[in-house]
Image (cartoon, rainbow, N blue to C red; front, side):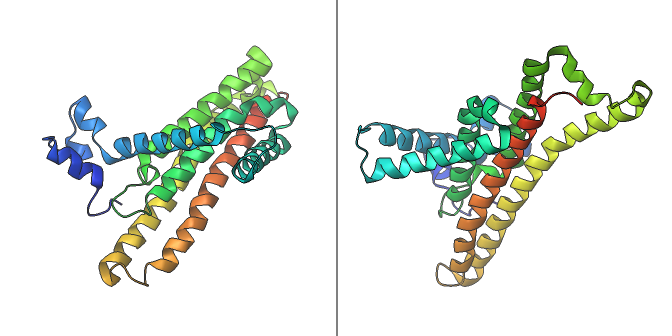
Length: 239
């Protein structure tokens, strides 16, 4: 759900660009100027700026800001290791990047004039495809060709039954990850838009906005937790 007025859309229109909807986008420029693409770049810029600020004044004896940052990072890493095991510690950059990207994207939609990239199925599907494809990359990395045993079942004569089910199940992971995140963020954006339309910028939307802070975090957490579980499953010994 888009806000009635998006700042970047207004800027592009002032610069002379003719903005079209997704169904009318026929060129690369049309696609790049879609809100979910432009605001994805905004999210990435925000994350890069925050990361630069966090590491610009690292000291041997940490101050308050550095302490908070270190607690957050170490907490995410240790929680990930409890799910994936010590062998999965190298996955931390990917998990943390996905988590911060989704969290900032979710929260960006709560700012009037901004758009949550995760409220568009294309963004959430891209994140889900990254996770599912990398899951199989891990499987091949840890098990080689034997990784295919994950899809074959316990006995050879069950292969015609088990193999299609496993393939459908792994495709369903993309749908599960993407639609769950998209549906929750889109629903929140829709409710906020309705409340702003009915009650204006006053007290009525506030409870939903506070709830959005909580659900935005929960959705990022669930996406990362499921990703960790998929990665851990791929690194385990074949059944």
